[in-house]
Length: 196
Image (cartoon, rainbow, N blue to C red; front, top):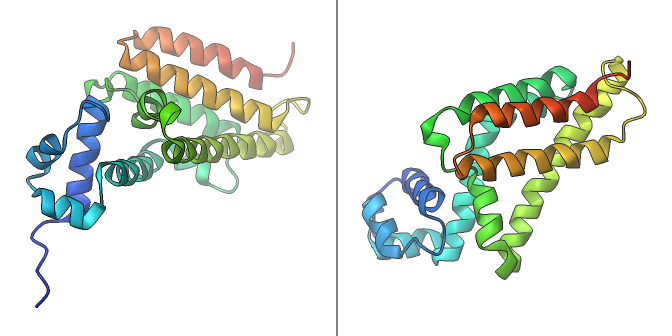
């Protein structure tokens, strides 16, 4: 007879994600995961695989959560300048929330693990590419609507906005003042303005 799973895998994954987000990969032990989730090692390994597999699942769970929280407007087919600005306003609002003082899980893992693990690096790059494509599509839509200068390279602008996003997340983890982040974001968004 098959053993009945005695825990909610989604909840366990969310709990594990928070441990990785708070402590990083290297400083998170399986004992930490067991303690935080309340799930046995057997249950963790049987459901998610090894620690690296759990990290990859946690990264995907984090990305899905952040998509709902910060990226949903940019997922609209007609997203344009307003959605780009709205994304940054939302991000800056969350920068003041102490629950976000850990920065961005994806950025943290990119700095800690990706240089040493091609699978993790590939996952980070996949997410970065998706975000750059969202920004680029919004820039193209904004250009069609006449809200963004036509001379801008949408793909290059999309990449630049991802770079600012990732750099801001690292600064946030290091305790940067949200007002300083806002100044950097405001300067970056000026690229979307028409020349005077």
